[in-house]
Length: 547
Image 1 (cartoon, rainbow, N blue to C red):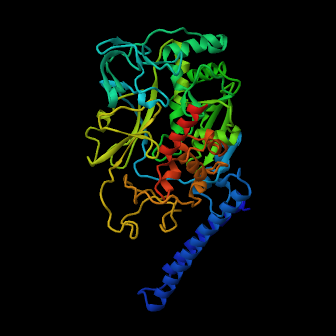
Image 2: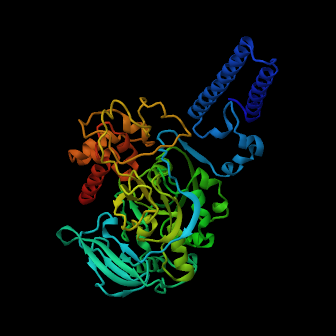
Image 3: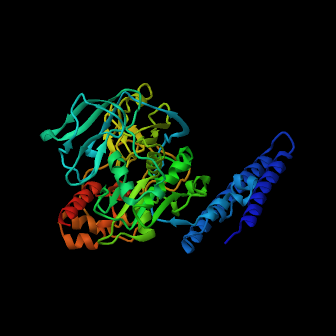
């Protein structure tokens, strides 16, 4: 294994060798004759060979080192030292040494153009929405507690569902109930609220969560609607008041394409509110975990936080999925219940207890290569996205996705942000035919296929559209899913078991550890073009109905 010091020596030697060759070539007398031209060309070829050999050797050493030791820090291993490390020294890894980083080797990063710039602006809209369709397991027609025209404040109860006794879904803003929008069979798709611009909230009991009883914490969370920020695994439904989770996992990582950078988002949060949120969660369970990605782990935000177990992860997507991380910390077995929550929602809970107001703040990334300006916005849950897109598109023929492009939901250009989403992805609509697209790729695009030479080009980014590049085919066993899912499961066999409704086989193959986002990359890579996320949701609903 090559040390950092030796790595620097090789890098500097290569540089000075190249410089010497160039200087030698310049010393040839004028005018340039045939011999000097040959020497110059030979020098260029030799420099190129040395450069390519160094890159190849660096790649091989890193791969072998990580294979032998998954926890090895790839930044300190190899033949070539980055210019940043040569200038600043090896202290760059000091912060990562404070927190153990688990490296996951399986996966694939879909590198799309249009990632949000780390600039943030405030954003409000005239209307907001609370959508029953954002919550798995709810009845198509929940019990409404308000009518059109009613005046509400943030935290006012809008509806509830008998299947989630004691849990209320509340308004994110103050204003007027503009419309209760219905879909097929009179199911409620959206409750649209016209904001009054005042953002007034109901007043809830304040106090340090650590000094309150569990019953008082639960009462405040349910009355305000903040309880719905907690998701329960298995099944991915709103946390049940009837269950006590063995752990709660705070997610501060996301490796999906065009997703938020939690290293940036965490620094926007109020640390005191975040700690208060952690204290509140500790009243609900015996163990609270904070799961960080590599950039978030290097941030100073997590330093000094108490009553929380910190876990850091490095790797390609889906290493940032909280389900994948739970699998490597303490997997979910039959009978286990765990809850998850996003980092920004923990700060919302903390603010609820410190100030007595319900203000579900979101830090969203507006991203996509068809945008004129892609950046971050501080806004509220359920915001309308129309003003974000107005005069900001280079092409009107686009698809707007609430969430990431792998597992998000399509919305209209005047649609609303999903309840649990923190990014809006905008990409070209792919409804055009490609002649011989399967045989002669017309443009560079992300793919796991070895046919494409740019698969391992780490710095390359791509423009993509929504084309599937093929139609649904025979469902054959390929092993592709296992290559991109860093979990000790057999996803292809699980999907087939779901299709045939084999309860025992579904349970034995580990369905309790998965949600749709965990198989989104497998769906992207699927040669058979199977709708894996849809099939998995059917399996989860089936298992929940039988449990």
